[in-house]
Length: 307
Image (cartoon, rainbow, N blue to C red; front, top):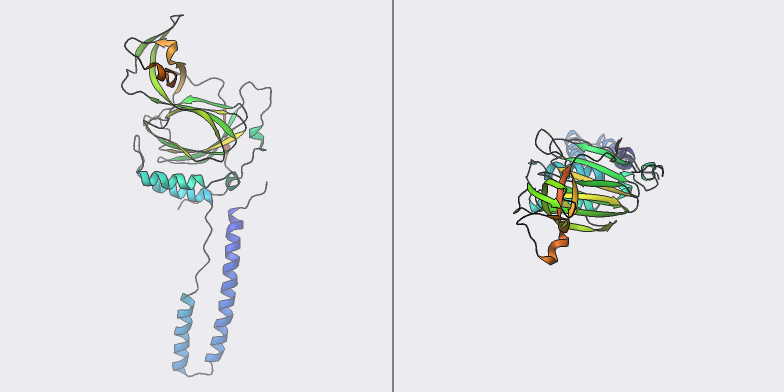
């Protein structure tokens, strides 16, 4: 699929501006020829008139690409970004509105791209990440998942994350911590009695399929499903904006988890109502899954201009 470049977009505006300038120049020459037959006073008035006339010529507005608009909005929304700092509600809505208006064609994506159709013999299909921008305040990028591709359950410590499903269908399962339960309870799997010394109780936030087009999803440091897992039902692409981005030195390390049904483990003193048991789970931190393959790739869409 062909796509317009930034040069193409600007070219149309510059062409229009050139036509306006040419027309204005012709009018000015006519006035200048007429002024040759006038006295100095009239000539002076004519020059002033031309100067006033010149001020009225406004250049055509330069079109701003959706990705550029997203970048500019992120700079504003995450200007005070830091661990645990959530943008104000009006800033949240400002960024959500910009993301809701972004479509695959805006960034040159199509399900027919090779990254959405990996070789069938691979056990775990690789996921491609298109890096758009990253700074200390925020990051922008696109996860491209082929059918059955999985981003395992992971967290976003102290971060506010916007996820826009650009196309396809994806299953999302997400959790938030239950804050009034110890994070280091000793749990025993029944009936095998296998020890899990560092499980923590979490509550299910979302467990459903999401199909594009749809609204942008938002998660927060302590709400909205901070730990989530993405499973591609069909080929799909997710535009992710993180504020602030992951940073080990600043304590924002990406952790991965196993999840166990609440009824599979028993922990002394921890109970939930019977009707709530299927909405809770035990999470245990794990190493990065060995079969998780994320391939980095360059974003080749419209260029972002850092002003």
